Image 1: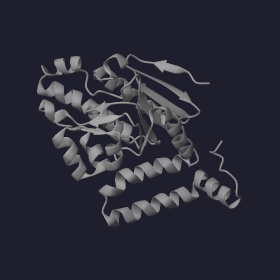
Image 2: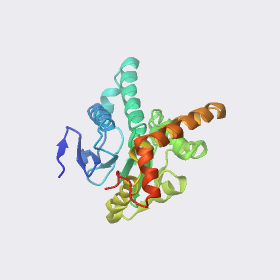
Image 3: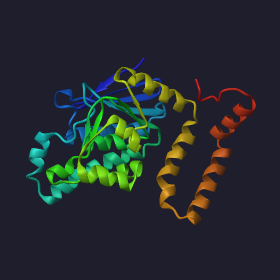
Image 4: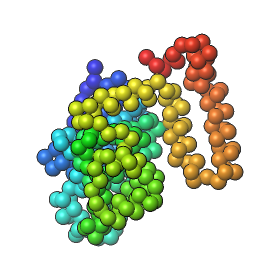
Length: 264
């Protein structure tokens, strides 16, 4: 049985070892402000240290995923000094990095529009499963701004060429184009969205939790290494996993033709 926790701008529950995070400002299409940034940062830091959570899913309440920055908040930000803006931006950058580097698989269940920083909250997830009604846009240039804090993750996900098109044009991208660009992993009819996410969760639950964490670490670090550095790092990673309790259990289960203990 799960219990739902409600914050000022988000809510979450843990059920069957899955953390369900919901952006909860449907009246303004889940636009984020400094409160939501702080609450999400605290929550994802907590989820990262919860041994009973193996997957984290984020979605939006109502018809939208996230419309980007709250206009009321932006109305105040426009009056901030450079130092104040820097502090706000550093916290947002910290949130995106915390979500991206979570040592557990993450899924964005995109139920509607994801605009600006909202599209950034999508990009930091390992899997993006979107409704066929979802829309995406990096529209910051239309305001004389840039998709700065989210750019490392979007570029990693879709590459430089496609990021150029998306960032410089600021045009809206429908779900099918997001799938074509590699921004989304799956696109399904809205009524099938939850079922598609549940299927992906089941797939992830069949894998070793520590192996998944190490996989995420490899994906983050190896692209930044030289081949010489990667040679030693990757050899050490697989050697450590082979002698670990999880690795021993996984290999033994394979030879005994049974499911490993982490599969319930």
